[in-house]
Every structure is written in structure tokens, then in C-alpha cells.
Image (cartoon, rainbow, N blue to C red; front, side, top):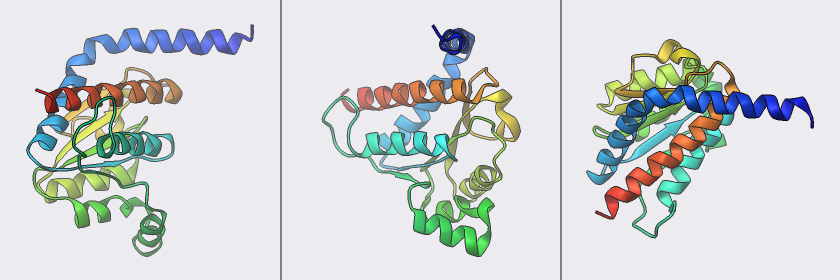
Length: 188
């Protein structure tokens, strides 16, 4: 067997074990998102690269469904519209690509969900600042100690790993947990 397969498996198992003490933080993230959706608010989500894919995954499952047929829930992935990204990036700079959309689409009581393995992306920090101005709540799923975002969101789950792939793998698991919490709330 290729030793990389065993190495990646071992790293993943270690990341999962190391994350156990922070599960209450993930629960808080899920509760904020579920509470906002139950109150009629919406989710805006953002991330870069693979984290953009996580934000898209969260939103498509909220609008469509995860496991159960239920009402559609309002969720918008801010990384999904290439025309908005390139327009804003060209006219205002890459660091504003999400903040400008938060300004346009965010409302008090909405939740901005940020996915980032490093916690250091300037465009996500600007989005958080705009969310605060708009009266929104902010949830962040990060890794690598939380980076510059650490301590700024209303709730955060920091994957205790500095390996980007392991962080993103646990973010994928976490977004499924969040979806299950939301759907459970809808069915009660």
C-alpha cells in the first residue's frame, strides 16, 4: 500500500480525536444557524477555494434538502456568482468580494457562515465587518488555530489541525451535522 494512504488516514483519525473537546462549539454554531432559520431569517455563506465549495454545499442542502423533505430554507452562497465576484473584484478589489454582497443581501437577524481553513482571508474578515454593520450574526468554521478571525464571530468551531485537507474534511462533516440539527428543529 502507498504510505500516503496510511498517513492521510492517521492524520484524519487524529484530527477527529482532537476535535472532540470542541464539539460544544460546533453545537453552538448549529444552534445559531437553526434559530435564525426558524425565525425566518436567511443564511449567507462564503469561503475561498475548497471552502467556497463547503459554503455552496451548505446552501444547496438548505434550499433543497439534506435528508428529509421539508420546506425550502433561504440560503445564498456568496462564492457562487462568478459575475458578482469578478465585477466586485475588478471595481472594489478582491478583499471586498463578499463584503459587498453582504451589504446588498444581509439583514438584521441573518447569519453569515464563513468557511476557512486558515482564518486569515482578508475578504472573509471584511465580510464579517459588514455583517456586524448589517446587524447579522456570524458563525465561522476555521482551522489552524482560528487565524485572524479567532474570537470575532458570534460562534466558531476551530478544527484543531494545521493541515488544510484535514480541516476541510472536518468542515464537510460539520456542515452535515449543522444540516441535521436544522432539519431536526423543523420536524419538532
